[in-house]
Image 1 (tube, rainbow, N blue to C red):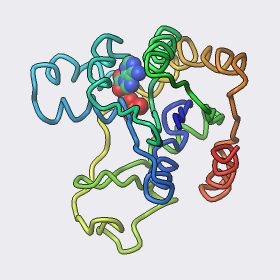
Image 2 (tube, protein in one colour; image 1 turned 90 degrees about the vertical axis):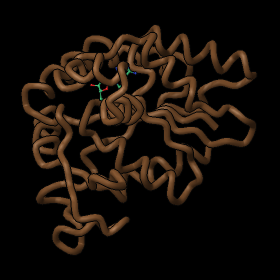
Image 3 (cartoon, helix red, strand yellow; image 1 turned 180 degrees about the vertical axis):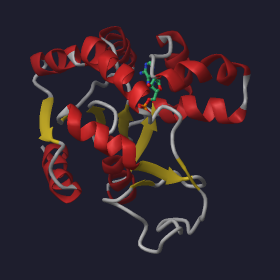
Length: 214
Ligand code: AMP
């Protein structure tokens, strides 16, 4: 099963992904995570894209697709969750072609809709564990024990370089201009499923469970 998460930055895609990986045997592929890993590793590519990431601008599709291809596993029976890809119509067409070549297709697209105001508040409070990447929010989703990650017990936390009001404004502009039109593309294919991303984590989780059963 190939599942695509579509939604603006901060809408909760990462949090829902964690659940699907832990409890529903999905393999999570986030192009944002792949790109950040390059930056962290200090590769030549990482150095090239670091400022793009920090500004909130999109990275050229050729680079993203090259990285993505290395992480994709289309074997039969694999449950693949794509997060942050596709982000443009061209990327969606490329994905369809890659899947067609292996006799597969996107099964379901979950569209997270949410107001801009809510996104600013979520991004302002978002931070994650520096070792395992578990996502938290101050003050809405803090670790159970202050300063200790619930998942790996790490004690170092970090904020993303693009989780600033300025970069978010850029990312939202990009999203509206080039990513939002994908809703129509997947709607026309009859595979778009909408969730109200302002609801609780648990409510959204239940809605997604229904979509991935059908
Ligand atoms: P994300 O973690 O999905 O919010 O992505 C973080 C950043 O990575 C984005 O603001 C872009 O700069 C870059 N990025 C992630 N996915 C893509 C993509 N499919 N196409 C182009 N740039 C991407």
